[in-house]
Image 1 (tube, rainbow, N blue to C red):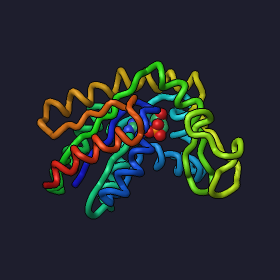
Image 2 (cartoon, protein in one colour):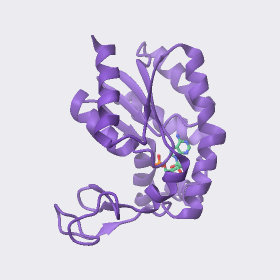
Image 3 (cartoon, rainbow, N blue to C red):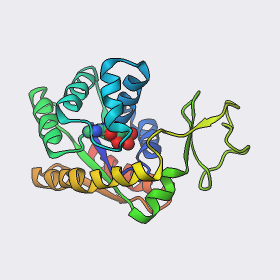
Length: 216
Ligand code: AMP
């Protein structure tokens, strides 16, 4: 099964992605993670990506499509795309690639979220730099302040998780990415919409039930 996971920043995509991987064994390709790894490598491409990412702006389509196409080609079996596509042109390029490979999308999962909650959710996010476990300063706090429960190392905050950049990322989402949901509605691919304001467990159950119905 091949799916796209969509939703505004801070809707809980990362957390839900982990659950879907556990349940369905998808290979999880997060464009944001792929770009952050490139940024950390210090390459020329990474420096270019950082200019956009640190400002909360979308990376240009040509760069995104090329990097993601390369990553997608390597995947055998189940695939979950997260954070890609984010523009209608990216979605069209993805459809073309998947159609050529005769591996079309099976579903698009959209997690919706209340914009008012998003800034609070994102600015409080922290991650363990060693194991990648996610926390939130008030919603999912570690036992000891700013220290990972599992590894005992300090938690970090993403460079682009500050309020100013979050607002820019939300604008990018409403202007460039919401039209992608309309695009998919028009293609007839199966859509599964979930209210991201529900609890983590409820959101997972709705998604899993929708995807299991597709498998059977
Ligand atoms: P994310 O981790 O998905 O929130 O992505 C972090 C940042 O990476 C975004 O704010 C964008 O600057 C960039 N990015 C990730 N995916 C895409 C994409 N599909 N198109 C354009 N920019 C992207």
